[in-house]
Amino acid sequence: MQTTKLKQPTNDTDFKTEGKSPFLYEKGISVLYGGISRWAREPLLHFLLIGAALFVIYHWLNPTAANSDTSRRIELTNDDIRQLEISWTAQWQRPPTPEEMRNLVEDKVRQEILYREGLALGLDRGDTIVKRRLAQKMEFLADDVSALRDPSLDELKKWYAKNGSQFSLPSRITFRHLYFSPDKRGAQARDAAASALAKLPDKSAATIDLTTLGDPFMFQDHYGDRTPDQVANVFGTKFAEELFKLSTW
Image (cartoon, rainbow, N blue to C red):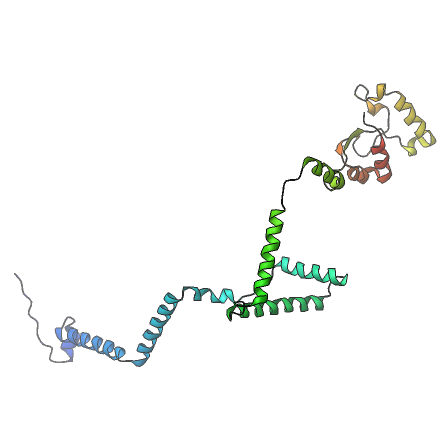
């Protein structure tokens, strides 16, 4: 078994060459322990540790404290702003100006702040007016719920007869047309159209090549399932009105 003999360094050269000297190792440990001991006696470290411990204990005893910032925030949604505008318009018969709207928002925020502060101070407890107001709200709510019932068939029919226009869809029509150019036929265009209409058997164009009766048209000659507005966009309002007056065939 091979053994290694350690010797005590006696000069600077020995300190440089003996990298694993027990003397240097023990000196390093002594310096480390000395630094830790000095930090352990540092008042600033004690202050930081005590502060961290108090912070953890406080949040452990008050779990809702973390959400205190959220509870202090006041948010007005678009519906809130719209309700302020509707209330103003109903009272003054005109929409509010930007300056008036800004004042309405500020009043709303101020009201919410005072309301929350009142709750925090417990001003709602033991107040006769608050109790009476809450009781009235519950009575109104109970009355509204108890008054609800399914409407009868006759009531539904009467209501639909009165409000059916709110749910009606625009009429639709499918048609083919022949175009007779006034530029090409001049004054004979109307007579040519009447002559072509007489050639339609039973007013049905299924068995006749309509392209041989009229003149070329820049758009299509068949339009399916079109509303009055769609027809008016192509042929004009007057044409659409007269077309929908005709009986379908």
